[in-house]
Length: 324
Image (spheres, helix red, strand yellow):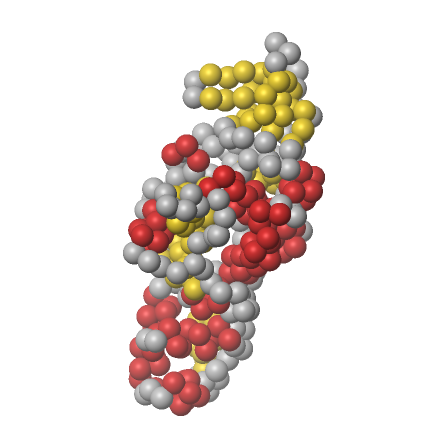
């Protein structure tokens, strides 16, 4: 491990408290000058580190810059190895490449900013730096391809639970993969899978989660402001993003071993706000008005069209029609 990573790990363990340069140098078996140089590098990278003569260095409680150390501090015994990048085109795209190269389950890529983030159906996912969580988790599940939807729906429940636990904000799910707060979309989830043709199961799956936690300096583009929001209205005074990343993963991992049992179905159903609503069923350029009747345990959505015809939707998109 590099000296920079070791210094940051110690500062994370003592976040909010001062530790002297002498103590850091002694613990890491390096010179005081080496510690000083690393502190400058970390400050330049955005970490809020204060230095006071005769007291030492402190990583402030409110420092928002993500790092493997800030995330690992909250992961406990989860078998997850985080990697953090200041900028990536897409965490999902990079992790798919890592998966093909043999990366193990539990590999986690996190980006401060994405320049080419994508949601379902290849749509652009707005991913500015500062206030969001953009991460992809590599899974190598032992179940059939038809159960891959469970990854997405389970992740939606995990995100909702984490939001309500640490942000005290009610969270709902728009079938099948969007999380809403305050009536606006705050999170999108996209699962991409590679099939094992010999076994008929999954070779691997990449679970991508993009969460708008609090406003970035850029703000939300005007053309998206009516649809897209943030969980919180302002930046927190603590390192909430690292806490939320770990909590989402912990919630998901608690259900992952029994994913196909769908033990979380009732939680998903309770949060699914399209039930009983009039919606547009969207397939490409086609839109058909329908009433949502129910959600089945396999997460198919039962709808009735204006013609009286009924259909169970296993994939696709629905949009709630405004009240008249």
